[in-house]
Amino acid sequence: MGSERTDAHIHLIYGVDDGAKTPEDMQRMLDEVHRNGITTVYATSHRTPGYREFPVDLYGARLAEANAYCRAQGYPITVLPGAEILYTPALHNEIEREELQTLGDTDVVLAEFVPNVRYEEICTAIELLQTHGFTPMLAHIERYACLAPTLFSRGKAYALKKKYPNVLLQVNCGAVLSRMQKPNGRYIEQWFRAELIDCIASDAHDCGRRKNRMQKACDALAPVCSPAYMTYLTTFGTNG
Image (cartoon, rainbow, N blue to C red; front, side):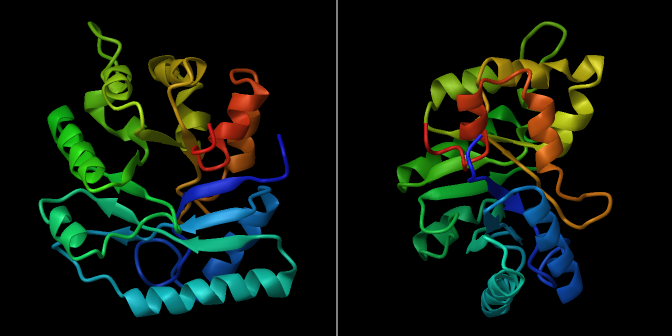
């Protein structure tokens, strides 16, 4: 693996969602980012269209704080803007107002869904975003029951990727480490063996229970993935 490594899903901007709470929390999370060999971070605070006003100015100021801390510590880390956007019926309003936050200056939108989302709703969201020129990245797809295998089916994640080849599928590092070790979670390993997944990310919220585990996840995936695919998985998933 090269020297570049991206975390496209992390909640380190303090005081705007359920991630970092204080400046010190954010700084400790950035220390963890550095220890995990990550050089580019997309600060993907939660946004819920139509339900909760997002503090745009506050977010921007604290994003600048994060970059200033990295410079002061000598970390080769760039913290870029982003968002984890919950799919709601109001999503189209943000699109029409041109307020939809992408990952940095890309056209990629990190979209999440409620765990019991229907497959058809995911398709609707994808088509909405693609129609307006965005590339959807589906956050932590391991959480959506409609995409997981059942006793009679290998799951709809494969069908989704076949139907929408340009959609990016993201899996959390925590799922790599926990579920790949369990018999009922071996399908996650199969996703990687089939090179179905486009991105792994920490989805870190703190330095405790939901800390950054990127390096450990990379180590766990090394026997399963080729070096080229590992690079793809850890450099935003858009370089393939």
